[in-house]
Amino acid sequence: MELELLGDHGYRHDIQEVLAGYFSENWTTALSRSLEWEAFKVAIRGESLAKTYGIRKKLDRELAQQADALNALQCQTDNGGVLENESQAVRGRISALWSRLDSYVLTHFRQRLHCEGDRSGRLLAWLLHRERSTPIILSLRGTTGDGILGQTRVNAHLREHLETIYSSLQCDASSQI
Image (cartoon, rainbow, N blue to C red; front, top):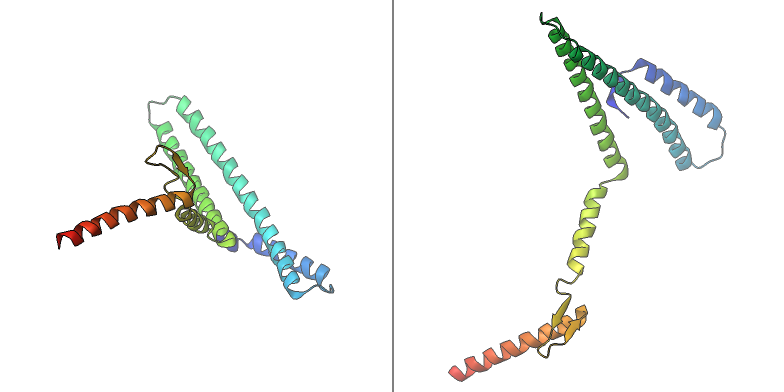
């Protein structure tokens, strides 16, 4: 729900009507309490969405009207500076409309993040987990020139190679003593 709606008396009246209609229709049903609560939230959410959609469309219309007015003013020429003052006023109104539209988008984004959870964070954690589980070395070429494919075979080949290197180093170290 947009914070702007809470100060709107018409919206409060609409919500009161929706709640009264909801309770008059659903008062005697034998549904579970959790299902009744979810239906109640859906009724309020539907009214809020309808109202915010109307606000968004109104902002879009006002923005288009102001842009048309600015274009008309820019097409006219005035040496006295009167049109420049008017165009500055129109630019100010356009800026105010854009800031209201930006706040609407940010509020909508926060609502989605709150309602649906932090999906981007979960997606990042899943990708990092998947990244750790995928092998970094997918294939090797052996000493004989044959290709070694598969994570287990690559790991086994690397283990053997490292064991031979370290065993030869241990033999050299023991012979030096």
